View 1: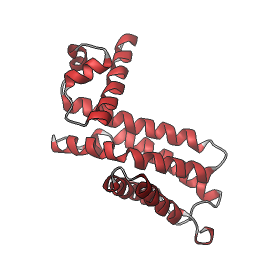
View 2: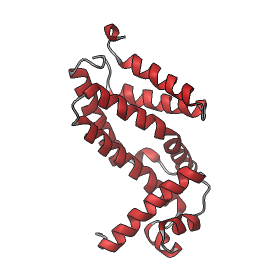
View 3: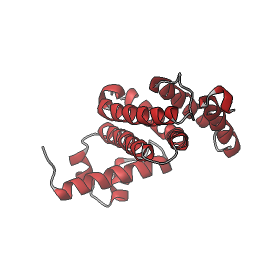
View 4: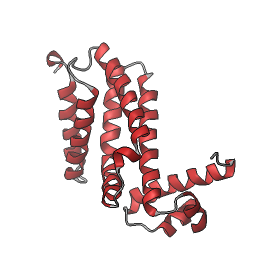
Amino acid sequence: MTLRADARRNRARILEAAEHVLVERGTTVSTEEIARAAGVGIGTVFRHFPTKEELLQGVFVARLHRLAEDANRLAGGPDPGAALASFLRQAAEQGEVKNALAGLLTSAGVDVRTAAAEAHAEVTAALGALLRGAQASGAVREDLRVADLIGLLAGTSKAIEYAGQDAAARERILAVILDGLRPGGAR
């Protein structure tokens, strides 16, 4: 079913507000607070997202779609190595919220892989384009695969989460990962 233009705008506002409120105040925020932040009534939220789990899933999937868009945008830039590094930094920094959303969805019985399969495929394809460009430019080691990068991102986002608000520690963690992506002679 195709949504009317106003319904699409409301849905987008709800997702944007939900993400903002969830990042700012945590995943225990109420649906009513999200409705207020979006400037819509609670009924509008429930028309689009009948349960809080569906709202969280919508935010989770929207974040993945945006990551794919960002990766595709960066892939068109002049410096493939810098583009990949920029994407990895952004994805790792956003990992804490993504991990919290995924944890909540999993605890609610949602199979996150199935729920976000299309968006995950988009991210994987976009990350593949970034990786191939960076490898072709000589900025990144040739033996890396997309699955390796996804694993590194997962671990890096957890490490950054563990570092907390220590900006220097977060930067060191990212620097170590990015150094490890370079070909041996580039260090």
